[in-house]
Image (cartoon, rainbow, N blue to C red):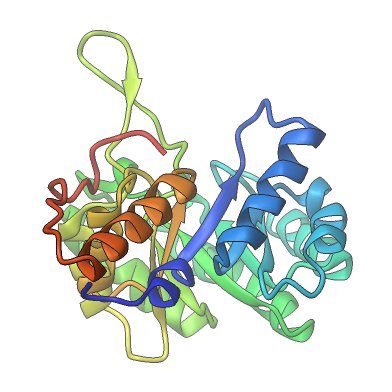
Length: 264
């Protein structure tokens, strides 16, 4: 195997963000995260306190989303939401930029928005991942191409104190020609672009569309250190299956890497 089990498991932020998530599903999800030894659970703010209780001593971090999923809260709301989450036990924060302000070219607003969350989180010893929602940015804005727009956001977030830049929320649905909604989420192109657009002190997180082991490995190949996922059990069970096959001398065929194909 190219990477160890721990290397891949500790990339995963197990996502517990679906709007219909029940209390039982939260508890089951935290139990699963602990059993598989992932990096963190990524959860909604109201659930932080309970998740922190469930995961105490497990080695799995608790992360909370802020201004989720569309980044439309005021800066002060985001800052206070961050304060409350950290007080309840969150040690990682996944915040969404104000997408409309970014597309309007109000870079000072966007930077101050990110900085307020980073400053608050860092005060509590927590780290911050800043979500761009790249599906909304493909055509660029404010006179910039899509790629130049994302590069500018990377530079802005690094200045503001971000610990990670993150591709997507997993809920950035775009209306399709047939009237339905879908999204790509993390793509190989965007992960490589974002990795090249920040210094070594800023990490990159993939989210949305990574649903199998080969996709997870590809994310690591591209330089990302974290990946949001709901298919945690399927990916890591597949790792153990391939590991066992290798140990027994049998060849196991992997599927083609699935990145940016929709679904979260």
